Length: 135
Ligand SMILES: [Ca+2]
Ligand SMILES: [Ca+2]
Image 1 (cartoon, rainbow, N blue to C red):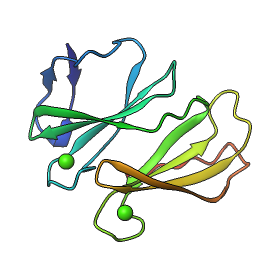
Image 2: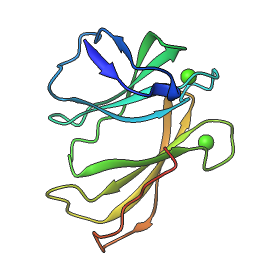
Image 3: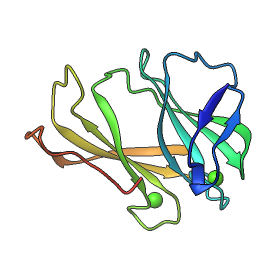
Image 4: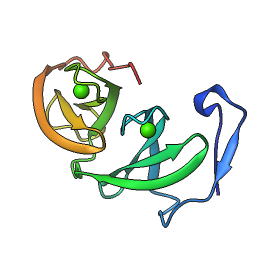
């Protein structure tokens, strides 16, 4: 069982993992990915680069949506919001973790929990800079 503190600014809640490796899956963001009005939980596997969204209804896990893997583990989610104003949250990634080969920043445009496209929006070679939000 994992605990999530301050999810949606409510009291700490707990829920049972759904067939996940409890060591490698990391919480990487919270946003309403499927545009149903409830915040969902972005998950990334730190060993494989697999990515998932836990679709939530209030504090209840409802389903898992699988996103494309980013097997280069230097990619990190930096921000989640609706960049192209289509009503669906998009995901900003930056290649800056340990072993990073580039300093690229890309946006994954999404249609609810379905990946549509990856667009390179630039690079930030200075590792002192971080993408900090919105998340
Ligand atoms: Ca949602
Ligand atoms: Ca969008």
